Picture 1 (cartoon, rainbow, N blue to C red):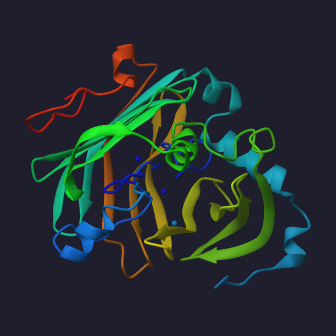
Picture 2: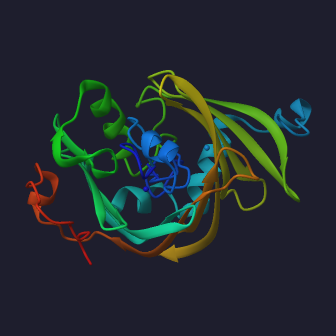
Length: 290
């Protein structure tokens, strides 16, 4: 669920995205190399403008594009009626893959975990002020309390409405860059600046107004790394449109992280213990709901 093999997964989140885990759209490379193992120890897990036409953009505003994108997904009322989500499937890094599950509940509660090569990462946020995470890929087997910076990130990840819904109230600024091209489609390009100063770009199909692409940068070991995520295989779940396929990487030629969602459950019932500090485990964990 922008993120997955590090300590920051938001499948990164456009309106209604599976969460800005993204969930795991945030960012990875193959798990096979030493460089990757080092990369997975970072604090974020998991996105040239073409043919910009400022004149055409004048017919639309950023608020209008966002409103149409929300309507394309099923409408604001249906989005807000969802009290909880469970998203499960498979995540692949290079040549290795494994199951993931993300559980989200209002307000801002999250439990995410995925298992790769018999090692399980878990990230939990109680929706208030505390979160916990482990990173077995860096030798950190048991969950520790998140730092202040990590808590700032997790509170955004756990907002499964996404940063474009009620953007102003969340302290986010949305600007319309203009008309663009994505493959053979006309798209609207929006620029989002979060309250923390992060800048991202969202490309919405000019006909369907569904999200097709996300662009951004993430910090890894003190350096900014470009990330792109591509969204496809939209399906209807409970009257809302969700993408079931996310391909991410540093460029269109380097999409080495793939998420294939198998099931989305809306208004699922959770044990509140799922959003508390996880118990230390001596053996690899099994993702919840599996």
